[in-house]
Image 1 (spheres, helix red, strand yellow):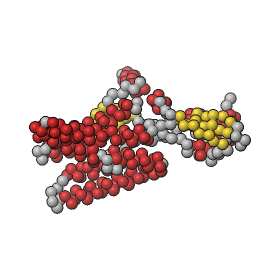
Image 2 (cartoon, helix red, strand yellow):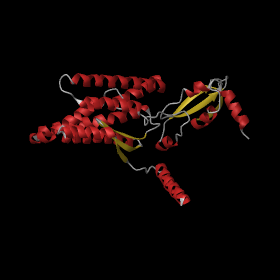
Image 3 (spheres, rainbow, N blue to C red):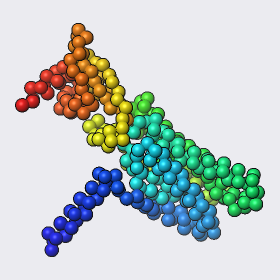
Image 4 (cartoon, rainbow, N blue to C red):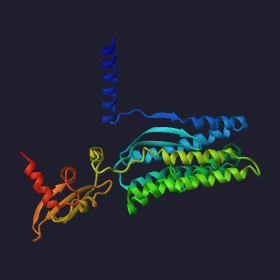
Length: 308
């Protein structure tokens, strides 16, 4: 019986892996426990309809991201409802930083377009205002709030992309943690201040949303040095051609790796004669077992000696 169950689990596991490889992974929706608590708070205050409107607007926001992802050949497969918003995630590893910035902007732009559409609707049909004013305000608020430079908000994603481009991944990670903690502290302070006037738990939920997003950002992976980039090649990648002296170190050559671009190295000797051309996969195969301080010529010689 145990062997039968093992075969059954292996069958379904293999089927799931095949669906992922074929790009057929199902779109899933999950709900964070704090989202339910947030909804209960609004229901307790008699504002359940307002909560539902903001939830729908947040989902529309996330599908704006999904639409742009589909346009650049990516597929987002997970929608997670969180307090004060939602997060959609999927396979975007390896896309250029410029595309990732546009992907982040797609959500706020969709919300801004919805808000502008409601305003136009009021101008043409004023009687619709009482039925659409909440949705218009929610769209405008989400468009503006999501541009705050704190993760997991879209403004935070954009800031992170610029930090990666100019200062590297390590600096970007530290920056986003610091910014996230700072914004969480600011909103906690605003929540405490609200108790002197009218307590506003929404501010506290928003502070928790930023805090949990800052430390739970497992879906924002940047290109790893020896990552499998076949999926990116399937979508199409521009080639980055670099000419280097074979006396350059492996570390120097690694600095030319760039997200979303396929590196091609042309190596020359001291007389300027072409020695060889290495694709990114060939270069990484050499670099993986080399001393990064060693010159490329020595690494290539070692690789040739290892060949049967």
